[in-house]
Image 1: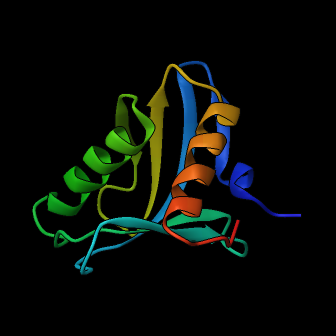
Image 2 (image 1 turned 180 degrees about the horizontal axis):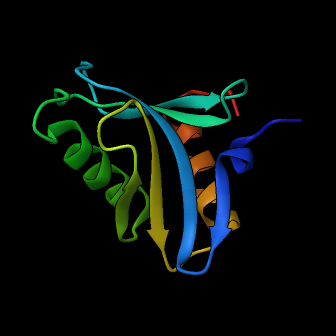
Length: 108
C-alpha cells in the first residue's frame, strides 16, 4: 500500500523527499501524497521564474519540517528532489502526516 513513506528515501546526509510542485498557486501547502507518481504534491504561491518557486518551496519545507532543506535536483522542472539534513524518513513521515491531518487532507 502506498503512503508518504514511498516519497522518502534514507541517504547518508539525512532524507530525500520526492516532490511535484504546482507553482503560481493561491497558497503554499502540501496537497497530498500522489500514489501514482510516488511524489508529495506541493502547491507553491510563487511563480516559476528566476528560482522564486524553488526558494519558496525550500523555505516552506524547512519551516514545516524544522530542518535544513536543500533542492537536490529539479531546479527547472515540476518534479524535484529535496534533501532534508540530519533526519530519518520515519521522522519526516510523522511530521508530514501531522501537517496533512491539520490541513484536512487525509490522502496518505
